[in-house]
Image (cartoon, rainbow, N blue to C red; front, side):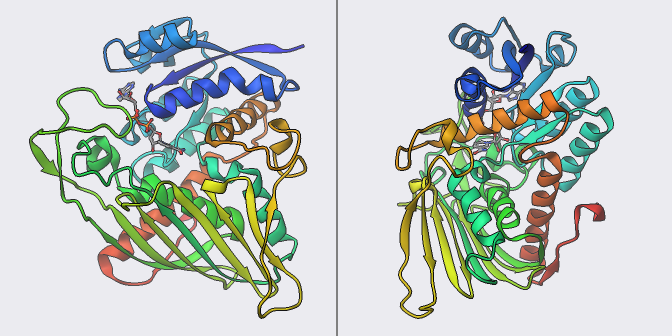
Amino acid sequence: MVDALGVAVVGFGWMGRVHTQAYARVRHHYPQLALRPELVTVAEEVPGRAEEAAARFGFASAARDWREVAADPRVRAVSITAPNFLHREIGVAMAEAGKHIWIEKPVGLGPGDARAVADAVAGAGVQGAVGFNYRNAPAVEAARELIASGGIGTVTHVRIRLFSDYAAHPEGALTWRYERERGGSGVLGDLASHGADLARFLLGDIASLTADTAVFLPERARPAGATAGHSRATGGELGPVENEDYVSCLLRFASGARGVLEACRVSVGEQNNYGFEVHGTEGAVFWDFRRMNELGVGRGTSYQDQPVSTVYVGPGDGEFGAFQPGAANAMGYDDLKVIEAYRFLRSVAEGVPYGATLEDAVHSAVVLDAMARSAESGAWVTVGGPAAL
Ligand SMILES: NC(=O)c1ccc[n+]([C@@H]2O[C@H](COP(=O)([O-])OP(=O)(O)OC[C@H]3O[C@@H](n4cnc5c(N)ncnc54)[C@H](O)[C@@H]3O)[C@@H](O)[C@H]2O)c1
């Protein structure tokens, strides 16, 4: 017996669309799911955008104010895909209204916001999933298992990189992303949040770090109207970029391993160059998002001149089998969101969390906060656990 679950989406930009498409596809890939999501309503503040989304994707209704969603008894689960400054208010209100939430990273403007949403979810006894989609890649799950099983020996060091050019164009509009009040941090929350989550997912807690940040494009043009994603604003009045374009960070893990995390949103020539290289005493494992279904694996007893092979993940790795029948049939970015939707809905159906939770968001936010404090002081900073909040 499959029950219907009324779902809503708040904020219909890029992520709003991707969450909606994931709800539409999830049962195609996971027919065993005990719930069938039904698109009940979509809320958007830009006039006409919710109505357009409803007409195109099949929501039963459209709203201008997300509070209507919180009060709607048809809605039992909500995707929160609005800008960062709204995550706390909407996340807490939805949880308190008894809705399960699937919220985008970084969950608010800082660790206090992530903690508040995590507490509201725990207090209401609802499920809370977070959009750390890169950990859903089957190759990343395979790398984690390889590392955990001792397959590359004792981990010595890791490099995690997140380079993109989405903000590199000088005419890129001064959207909410570049404002402290509405975006919070810059590339820290936008990309390094994924890096901090991947670091912990693969290698465990970060004990301390030191970081450096920079703004390379200090002014951008104000947009004339509504924006979505990374819009352009040619000829608009210039305003200040208030948060960092770049971060580099040295990491010390609780295990004793060392790491480097580097992220930039204005890297000309780099498109979604996200990945990691993890090195151990007996091997190494490499992953690049642009070749998402491959791992570079070097293992053996040569130590020096040890070859590295390309391994295509297959149906035995992570959730690959829900998408493709055999290795080297490619999965893509949106599939990672279908996996996230599945884990979220399975959590709701079974009452236990699967996949990244609000506690993972708190962990990531605490690491980002430590990076920001270190960049300001120039010192090494001890990363307090979420309990330190
Ligand atoms: N997991 C990922 O890989 C990933 C990728 C991109 C963005 N994100 C996250 O998703 C969130 C949204 O990012 P995006 O790229 O979709 O941004 P976007 O600007 O494309 O979309 C945000 C949407 O929210 C709407 N909005 C603003 N205020 C609103 C309100 N009060 N009520 C309802 N809607 C409102 C905007 O009009 C816009 O349509 C951010 O938190 C971002 O960090 C995650």
